Length: 282
Length: 103
Image (cartoon, rainbow over all chains, first blue to last red; front, side):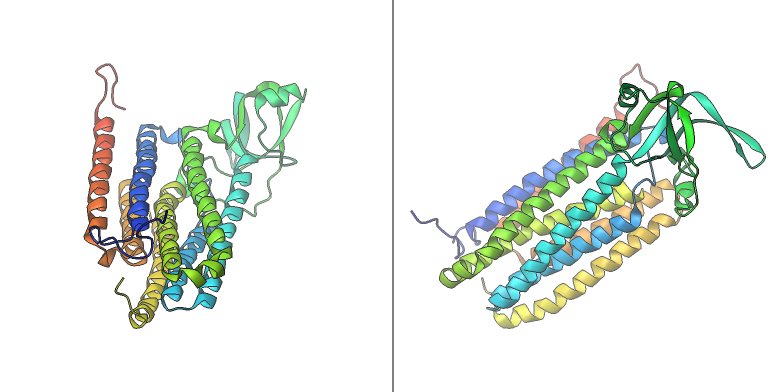
């Protein structure tokens, strides 16, 4: 049986069926991301500022990733326009660039995730006394790295390894000092490792979902978004490799498929346009 | 589909301009976050820029500026339920059990 209205618009709706289909799907996606966004808002307004990390994400990298997605959105629409103008060769170039952009986005995102998994916060039972200028400051919690850059270390794991102490390289500022302090952070400053006895540690965790509600919602939102990028990339790769065959026999139907996959891709870009400022900048 | 080759090549220029505008918007978003306007205004400004960028994507890349009525009907429902969801969010924020106190 032939699927009706894949190339020509259906008289009563005025559009081909796949277009109605994708818009209904996107409507459900709006509610999915909307619900998570709503959760984010409630977690954010309900959190004490000392427990809501700011400035821990890498803004330049996030900005590059935003630009990569915008570029891919342009090439997606150019790929479709090329088919409309009957240029299969140009379509293939634009489609290939889009897929590469999607992969670049995912690679950058995975490096960002790895950065979080090796970045720690430690809470101390016995506060550490540090000389800050002329003042003595007592430190109860700090963020930083552990020598050797291990990932996913926690207090139970440290204890299981029978370690006496951990070599902790503290960050200049703690996020509870606010965004301004975090922005002044000097990434090139030399930081010395301090030995923290394991018996003094109350809690140790890297920036994984279990760290705080912020990272829980951060990984949920960006993880779900990254899955959408991956899904979109797979569909576009399939269309890229079957392009020549289908375009020869059913050019209109194929062009519509590209339009529909493009609509999904623009939606994924659109979600990121909101996620980027909300998670990275505020 | 009433698009002709001629119309499409005119659109292509527009797509590139929109793409450039979106990149500029991204830079603006980042720059605006470094200006301290007070937390509420920073959030408001960031959301205004994001909404403007999202509108450009929806209107031009997703062709919503000239779509069939059926698509608008689907979107009208989406908008209605999305606004409802956000209204519930705001209501939830203001709804505290009698035993809790506001910070």
